[in-house]
Length: 592
Image (cartoon, rainbow, N blue to C red; front, top):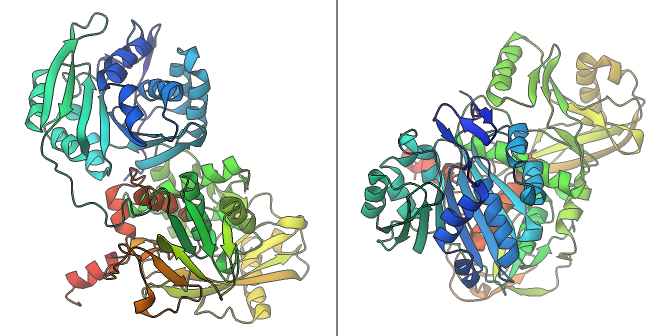
């Protein structure tokens, strides 16, 4: 099954792109930008309505060329409240190729500065949710690339304004089906406004049945009428996350663990203006995050499953983040193929993944992979976050988050020790991956890694080096034969779960009772000394050997939850990585 969305079939006319499969245009020939402003922005009471709240959420059905998003962004920049954030959520089944997006948006030169930023972050056409951040303008875009019937149930948000901008109902019935309206009601905040160009009877009836008060308004251009609606029906929302809005704007979060998980979460919370303290006796970039060099590669499976969508989205999010921060060498990587079974598997994966993945004679070329300095990334993400290493002090905090690796308070984690080696020799032109890997490293050396040993002991370094070199000799003898002894070796301990997926969320079963937490830095206070509001058992761990690929997006998701913002993940993806999944599986098997 394909993991990517097909691009739309386009015809180009003097007035812009046309979708012949839907017999409809992407924007009005009479002034697409003016229509957006009249129908959607004014129709939803903007900008007045976003002046009254810190987080304002716009939901859109039909991203198209992004014109509505860019118009909202422009208006937001002109009128936003001082402490406000705009969260824009949109669904698109047929995302445009980046070149087509650039061509379409060239028709609006007054939006060029904003459209350039959108194009620079435009995601791969992979199915699922993709979070783009524009921090300078206090704006996020979460783009769900999927069929609307599949995407809407995956969204978790409180939407204040809806732009219904699919192709006309007569040509795109699935976009306006009866299943859409209850989902809009579920996601709508009290008083949410809806705007759309259509006045089709099925749309009016669907909105009314879902609890919206619907009213016809004068149309734009040659269109005689349009619709506006206000949500005043009963809430259909599921029970909210128990830790949502747990971290007040004036609160302090203590993060246990100074590795990639802790630094990513500190970065995500500080972006939101929260005060953060990192607590780790080893300081920053200790443990498994302290290797001398690392490879950023995606976790590849030939299946369209929730965890696959989520981990691929996480890889893309991390890649964009590191590139923006200047801490990624985007060299690509070659995954070697050793037998016909490998070739069949990776050929199928390349076909499922689409752009950026190519089968070559020697293996699978992953153009979006790259090389990085782990410690540098951790330091950049942590920034000037306060880091406490001593064990003789007490802290007060609103919230404690466990981002330790193998020491995290989650019993399903297992330890896996490993070593990597820096050697003198001739580095490969790009990273090479098999069960191990090799790449260029700092100071002109060659990185060779990594071993995997059960438990916390990495084993004898000389034996480990011989094993890695023997494997390299079989797979890349032209590299192995240039190596001249071990210049340096490093060991660390990974934390992994039984299903090799991260854990992110609240561990079930812990309850505490008052407002403040007094936390001993050694973590060994008796329960009577713990004073906290709400659950304090939130964990981000189990990242295994892919912490740098997965931690940034999972940290963004936790920070969104804690600050009451829309989630950047599909609901099914959240559930696939939730710590409760193991207990749920045991319950289903009758083991609890």
